[in-house]
Image (tube, rainbow, N blue to C red):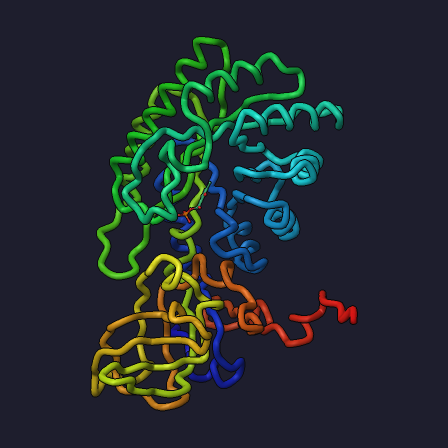
Length: 401
Ligand SMILES: Cc1ncc(COP(=O)(O)O)c(C=O)c1O
């Protein structure tokens, strides 16, 4: 069954996101199956798309959650993801967030600095608890991706180097309020090369072995997320190869494997649908102006990211153009110099691969209300987030003069 963009656009108006839930299931199953030789947990990276229905759908498949704020953690719990399948990561967790995470009794808190470890020790002592932790190791590996989403080099803010990680594990072993149960690394996002992942896993695996000799036994090995997807013509890592290489690197270590995919599970399941408002020509340049904008889908503006764009039901009179939104920024574009069929007002543009880091990175810039989200599941479309109203948008403000 195909998504009927025309009918849905009439019913819900544009712009909106729509996610194909059957495709999400397919991706989840492929990854889970690839790791079947071991105990594994797929902890979905909530940041990629945090809509409650998306989370619930993944929970129903058996997924856990990788959260980077207390808000994400509350979302995961709200849809019923079991606390023992939840990980809390992030370089800057506040006391309040750490305290809440402790009280929720989640699987583990992923610690990213020595200062955070000591802070967590104080907070868990105060609560009379033992904090289950993992430590995020920064293996100093170039992930060969966009610099904004590369996280595994020492120059990046994430995690701690191998030597410090080892000292932190020793510290945790000697603390009655900390229990180190896991180890973690995540070198970047939209990865299309296997070798940096394997190199990172091997570095972390050898740390696990040296910890073992100190009688520090880790139970969970978290390889992070980062699997790339095809936006244009990228040659992707084969999931089977990815899993096999990781399993091989962890051979002889008795560990439950965790991975935290975001983009892989949802990116290519989502479409951003927007209508043409006008076409115009500025000197020799053709602009297609649409009702969606950078506040709805910021990836092209932020990373110069490519998204395939198609004019629904039109393939004729193709010429080069920029597809732009109505926001007063020259950075407000979805594509530059792409070949697109001639359009007229109200034609629908389908922006592909928009399921990850689309809505979840959207904002109200220019006092634009955030768009609706729909789910397409077993041949039917359902509204899973209504479009914001102007009243929603100003509801937290006070006119104090
Ligand atoms: C710690 C961590 N895990 C998982 C992810 C998910 O990455 P991706 O969506 O590329 O799989 C991220 C992304 O930033 C991350 O920082």
